[in-house]
Image 1 (cartoon, rainbow, N blue to C red):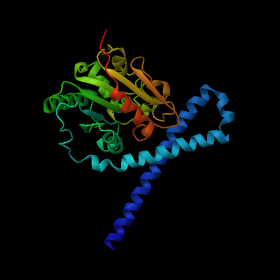
Image 2: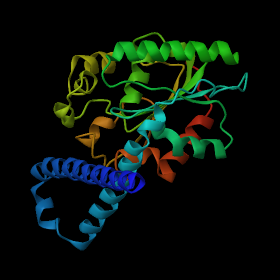
Image 3: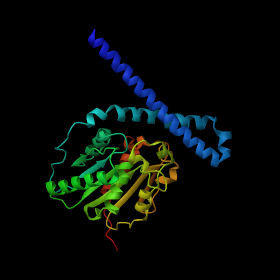
Image 4: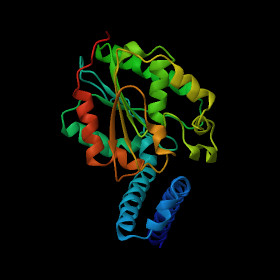
Length: 285
């Protein structure tokens, strides 16, 4: 009886989560459509064409699935992981997640990196309810721990969404430029997102376009001894408008036909990340 009840509650909880994910993805893409159709009214006449309907399906269905997996794994991310890096003299790769999730969202990403013999992959939790300075301080402490523990001078940083912004804050405003070799951003809202106005947490509000934080960050000096790769999708349902995920410096890698969360699960962006990690750092001139 108890087992049956628990199983029933489990099914209900997962079904509710799936419906919630579907509504969030549908709402975010609906807002995107509203914005772009108002700037280009000609799009309205094409909205029900077979090609566009197929595009909608290929965007929404995978994004709902990946969002569902990401949220469902959150409990596993609460487990403390103290022994993630052990290979001395090997530059570690530190993964920084985005808003409202935790380190568990990287499980597939880490698996793909390890299959390509990437060592010393490390994750940490970044609470959405702390300020950017608190999280940057946490990042700085973790980087110093890794440098001391592994006997290395620098680390590689990979940040998805807000994680990329925290990484940029560290290297551009908090003096971390000489401790980072590669900085790779995945779907980071470098110039904010109009959807940030819906945020209920302090960290998300920093991503409102033209916020003080974004102005400070985007006017800060460009670090010359860091190899930055900015990976993004032009169909991002969380960065609105999509041009806000562009940067005027570093290498840009653009993808099509995928949403925001898909960037940390799909084969192509993961391959682009691996390629970026292997690129030699160009010395400053």
